[in-house]
Length: 158
Image (tube, rainbow, N blue to C red; front, top):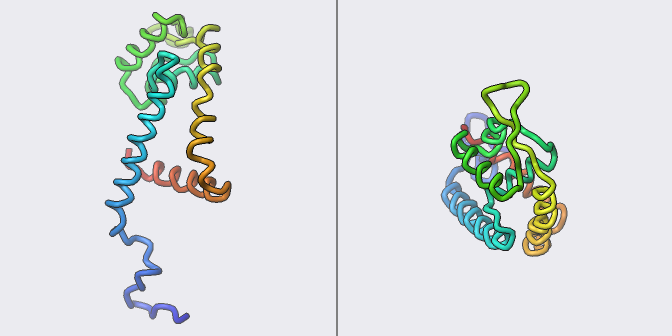
């Protein structure tokens, strides 16, 4: 195979910034995101949790207590929105608010035993996703897909 000559336009096969497929890729990712949201909502419906509430519980499983501001940042939402999610979870006895010893203006959101139990019963979400979707692709392709999606996510300007 002959390489493209210097100062000559690269062949279409060797171009790395050919954006002609970008609209199709965006539509495919957007459609997949909508389907995943539907899947998540339907799967969580039985537990009485919204996807946002489930995500907060998943963050608290790894660390029993986190500052409300940190949860808001991790969930990519405003503090008042996170406060509303925490209020709902607190009414369900899944979390409790505690004073934050390092920030007297802030609160720690802490997972309760009931929250831990409900989360453990609901973690089959990942298993269901795996059995529905991930078995379609060989392990090598799943790994590559994960790498590519992470790369796309990291490239977003916000």
